[in-house]
Image (cartoon, rainbow, N blue to C red; front, side, top):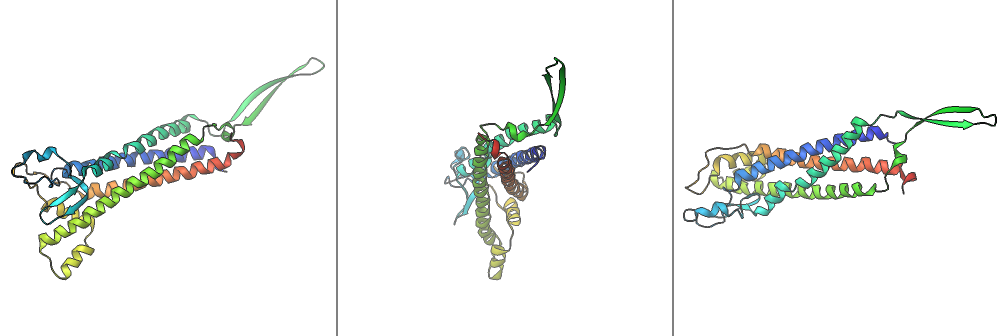
Amino acid sequence: MINPYLSERILASLHTIGTLCTLLATICTSILWLHWRVVLNTCAGNFQTYPSYYDEHDCGCFLYASDTLSYFVGGHIGWCYFGAFGTILPLFFFFIFGCYHVFRVCFKSEGKPRSAKAQMTHRSNEIMQLTIEQELDEQDTISPYYWMPSTAIAIMLIYSIVHASILTDGLFKTCKQYRNRVVKYTHASGQMVGVLQNRLTCGAVFDFMDYLHEDLSYERRRDYRINSSIPYYISLISVWIACICWIGVIIICARRFRDSRRVRI
């Protein structure tokens, strides 16, 4: 049987880590999106005669970008909306559940016995006062609505895995497509093409992208660069750590439910 106080500490830690990782993933994904949303929006047509294409961000997403004969075109903007804002819902549940478990850790006593006084009267009219100390078992006070947070946690796990999978696949597809652009930039041939296509890491590909990929509009040239590989790696690692936190929460909750099955309503 798992110690209730220990399980509360583990749950508080998991929710805190999940909150920080989800927030970090949101920030890093938003940085990539805001940096590349104009530059990759190359599906508007003639960029010299269509200055308002900056306001039509239909294909300015860094996820699922594709290399064409003329331009390197970003993915549909809907992917970036889901990638950047899709973490808000798990962040909300991480924060709420985290506050609940942190409160229980900070303000609940660790296994201290409760005292109770009882009076007994004998036939001789003598009153005896007894003091009884009993260790409170948290499993005996389980709520009949225990299944509601468990259902929310299970839904958040599935949702987080789907979100992390889409973010990972979208970034890998962009990386794979931009390798073709690097081959064109370097005029590679022969074995060099195989090296660039198979051995060049995504971090190095994004380094090429930072320095070689320019804005096609003459009206708005970028005068700054970011290291895109840093938010790329941080966002991927953070979303998958958040998924691991959800899995850990489910394991702890499952053990607690198994230990408390005798008192469930």
